[in-house]
Length: 142
View 1 (spheres, one colour):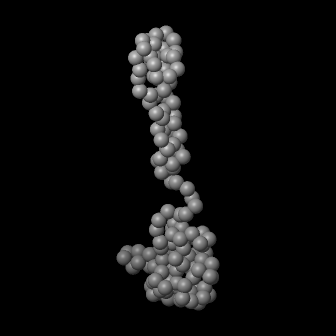
View 2 (cartoon, one colour; view 1 turned 45 degrees about the vertical axis):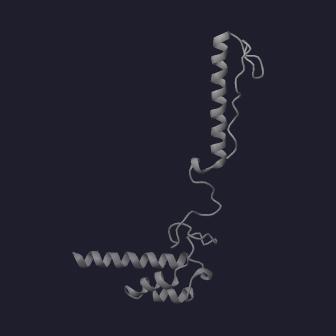
View 3 (cartoon, helix red, strand yellow; view 1 turned 90 degrees about the vertical axis):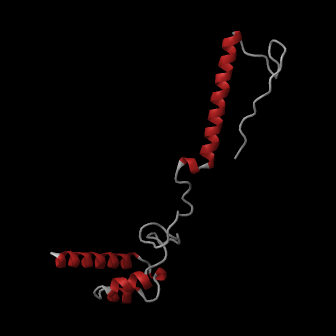
């Protein structure tokens, strides 16, 4: 049973390496030309090992010059030019969220003031009774 599992694992490794070689453009492959790598990869156990260590491109599966372009590349990290991955990483989203929060707060304050006196407060800092209050500034840009 162990021999069958080992054989299937080696066969899977060889298929993976052959597909990786076939998908890689020749100008990105290191050390040897693509055709020679196809023959080297057929060596039992050593072929795939040589490919991974010495021939595999250092770019992802798109091979468009994107370093670390996901599965198939050996470098990690986010892909450039893809934009933020989550809304809380997007500065425009955060700015819009602050503005919405600010608008909701001002609307709530306006309704509270209308409920107290039955009308909109006069413009400016002065209250109807003559006292003054500090104005609240909107949130600044990040």
